[in-house]
Length: 268
Image 1: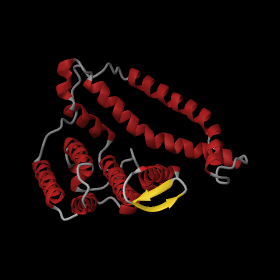
Image 2: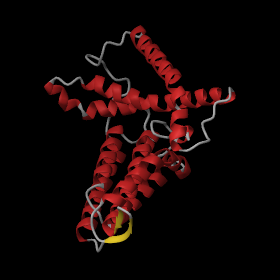
Image 3: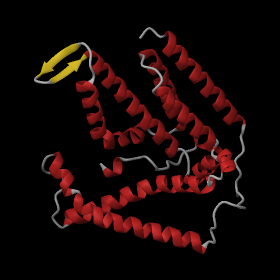
Image 4: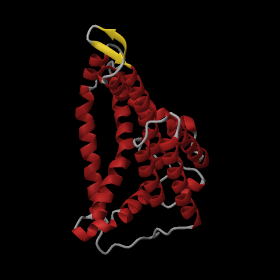
């Protein structure tokens, strides 16, 4: 399951999505995620589904590679569905002791599953098609207006990019530690959910040591290269909008118009 997490990884491919300006992908991802929580109608989610699958097809990233990251949020989905299913008041469908399943709870659970699924896939698609360097440059450009109020934009973008980049590195390190401990007789598979959680406790100490060691190595490497922050720094490849980026903005505008229309006048 550790290797199934795809958030923070980059998938090399020759597609129009990979070649787009990172600012377009960041804005598009944010708008897409916001649109998922604006409406609760099947027609609006039909528009969101068509848009998402169209982007996945254009990106040339295998659908199985994207969806395998969903295995890591099964527990989160289960907890969210349970809370919405049993704690939403409304018309009672099934009642067992003090637990009540209502029609409104079933609807809320269904919409929440769709939202979480599309949110994870959309976010993963952005990181899979954008290198960490481009992601840092895109964040820095978008956050540039905040520098007026003395916000260290470059440092914030750098920290976010490093955090995303460290996700697959730490997951790979966790997988190595688990395999090493399993070779010495550790058992991470048997038992119930609580026992499995307890079995993962011995992983924390070596994982934290490895994380601090990698962070120290990164800091030393940046210091050896005379890194002193973003002030006065230039770009080897400055970000510039091209025709495909303006077309992408136009497509995003059409998507937002379509989902607003579907959510406002949709039959469901």
